[in-house]
Amino acid sequence: MKRERTVYLHGFASSPASKKAAFFRSRFHEAGIEIEIPDLTEGRFEHLTISGQLRVVEACAAGEPVTLIGSSMGGYLAALYAARHPETVRLVLLAPAFGFPGRWKDSLGEEKLRTWRETGSLNFYNYAEGRDCAVSYRLIEDARQYEDMPRVTQPVRIFHGRFDTVVPVGYSLEFARGRSNVELDVLDSDHELLSALDVMWRGMRAFLA
Image (cartoon, rainbow, N blue to C red):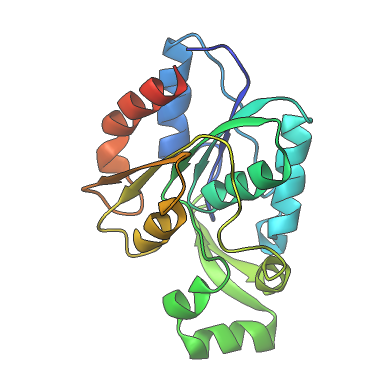
């Protein structure tokens, strides 16, 4: 593999200690490459926004050429960053959360989304802390300024589970349609993709080589 900076971006309600992050950190280490895995929440899950997370990515990348690997929301952030930073070398996206924030209505339902908007916060299970934590509605308000499908021109490899009910694979199919720079692998897995870790690693190594 080419020795260049590689950054892994975890998903919503996740952390640098997630199972996928730990798996890929270990595999890259065995290949002689240390990957960076920033905490996108900065310890403030309740105040999470897309803009705040992008600032974390910008600080980590520091304007240098970088390969980004993003899971779910981290995949969406990677695409947003690459569309704004041409020095980004390539992307590997794992069930990327395209279509944000419009998908929340489908996933939560109109009534629950309205409650979130009216009360200003809603509880979500935070896997990093092992408990329910409130998240401000600012996450949705802030996200409205960002495009559903970022215009990424760099090489992209996407892995998405055909049984994903959190971010349906149709979003990645739409993103890949008509883009010669995008390679999409639809796997027999769900949103977590934990059953496909070895398959993704082999595909990732071939793509990054």
